[in-house]
Image 1 (cartoon, rainbow, N blue to C red):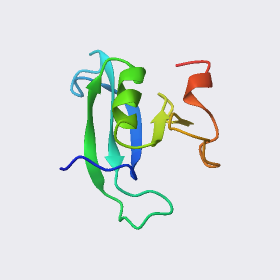
Image 2: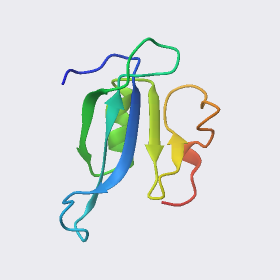
Image 3: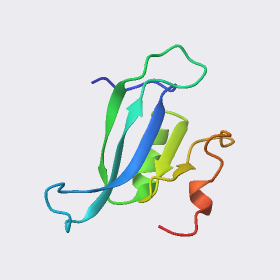
Length: 100
């Protein structure tokens, strides 16, 4: 796996730290897909996001690698956490969510 350039899409989500133990603590993780609408790249994982204790740590890590960041809540609802305006297919902003 190589570090990805600025044109992929970071997908972040909450996950149990120990998938075999549902009572374990939660973390924020995900991946960077090399595909991005408007760019010639085939879908595929370009980088795995390490486990972070907070959503803000995961978002900061992702933003260092790409301006396109989508974060999912526990219900898998997508929110925009990237730079610039939110795309039409992910109109809700993570910074404005009311519950998690």
